[in-house]
Length: 189
Image (tube, rainbow, N blue to C red; front, side):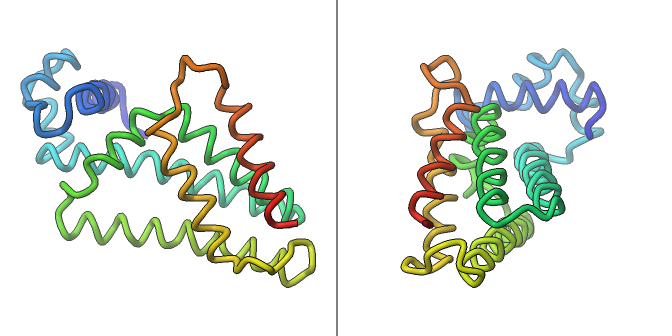
């Protein structure tokens, strides 16, 4: 978990990257918005792209920990899928600016960072896939649609949230999470 100064820098970068884009945001604008010095920023981040990766790392680390915790509960597959999706949708909607920044600026990561990103994304996908496959194998879910397709569709919906979800809109993250989980589970049964 970042300390107070590091979190101020991250929060300022998220706001600026979300509102004006990564390329249009200078290090000076970040430090001014965070009310820190350039030295403070460079103490925590070697370069602006390290800051971009940290925004993603914090989000995916939290979401992966939530998924691992839910799986550790040992619930039936349907309840596990519901809880994973509800947690993922809620955290994505509550942190929609971070998600939007990362989705929009993903191509800016260097090869090493992209490798790290792909590995964590693959782990999340494969863990969620195992839950759906188990539900299909146990007969709790239909296997008309392959588990991999179900997982790709479910995660694809979540990945598109930054394009259309508005925090000040009619639906709260929790309501939206329930609706998306219901939709996916209806397709599995």
